[in-house]
Length: 256
Image (cartoon, rainbow, N blue to C red):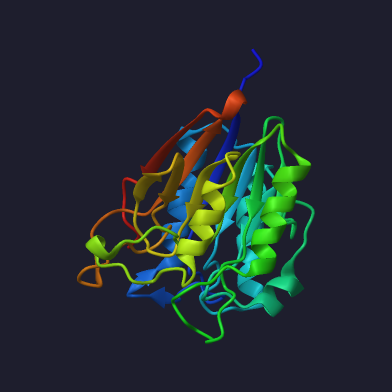
């Protein structure tokens, strides 16, 4: 029976190293990444598309980006990505595109489009804060105008909502401007992100803002401590007429 939805797998904040023994906050992120992928293969159908929302290679090495691509090849699904504040664009450019990893920042589906947005437009290198440029906002408006029949998912690394009550201050510097722009575009239904290494869902002005657990360590932002929550990932089911379902899944076993 033909499905009436498109499945999207979101992975985020891999923080991988070229060295298989590399540790990030005392966690072997390659091991945890492998367990996440194994969990997906064991429990779920093949996704139609994979979206990675940044912080892919913690060491920024070209070899790390190639390792990520080879690891995802088994899904036989196209991979789109945005870079995070820990990524190295020039090395990612050396590794991609590949047959199954595209550098395109726009994906057209049957009833939806996914617009991948660069939130790293910031004058201070290595800053945890993000910024979305005026040019990116204009690009989003133009794509929505070009495809008025499609609902829209925005994928970006940094988070837009104010999370001060959660102790999170790694925000997009011009988040109010960006959110006001989005609120004037009814086609935008979802904004998916990573960056904070934890799960949340906030609905504002009809737009659902989602953050997804990292494939490595999970953070408790108020104390800036690592939690015992397992690594995870997010599924999206995109239906016609702008309807969607989403769920976060976590692995059963922590990386050793």
